[in-house]
Amino acid sequence: MRWTTLVLSATAVLAAWPAFATAAPGSYAAAAAAEAKPLPPAQRLERRFLQISAANLRFQSEASQLAEARTNNPAVKDLARTLLARQQTAQPELLRLLHVRGMAPPMPTNEHGKVLKQLAKLTGAKFDRLYVDEVVLRSYQADIANYEKVGAQAEDPVLKAWIDRQLPTLRFHYAKAGKALPSASLRGQRAV
Image 1 (cartoon, one colour):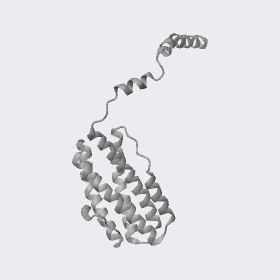
Image 2 (tube, rainbow, N blue to C red):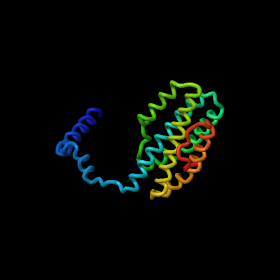
Image 3 (cartoon, helix red, strand yellow):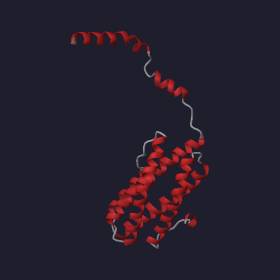
Image 4 (spheres, one colour):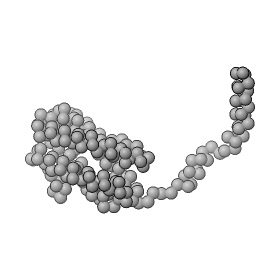
């Protein structure tokens, strides 16, 4: 019985071999590339926005975890907890938006990695200053501008609704960061 099954399997493979041999290597990829059409500008904008937003959210989350553990300033600690709470609610929604487009969450950027390394080396007021200035104020200001731009230009109603829900929270956190360290540089008060 085993011998018969083995002989039949081998015969089937050998019979199908010419079909495999005639296909040019990589012809599927070449055909797929020839048929590929570029994404419309609105979809490219939406995809880029999601990549940037996911990378920033991850960066803000990792830095906020550091801040929650390392700072002695109660206002900065509260700010870090607030940002972590936002991450807990926004991340699953953002991952879903990426997933429905067949996109994976992006890796952290080099700039984000440098700031995280700097934060890991600092303590006290220097840590607080870098966290508030770079992670919250600078990052959130860029996020707010990006969300406003894409919110006005996006065609996907689900993405637009998500942006509309996130913008008030981003603005609130941006304003809260300015109060956490009163001497922090609130660049461009427009977002508040």
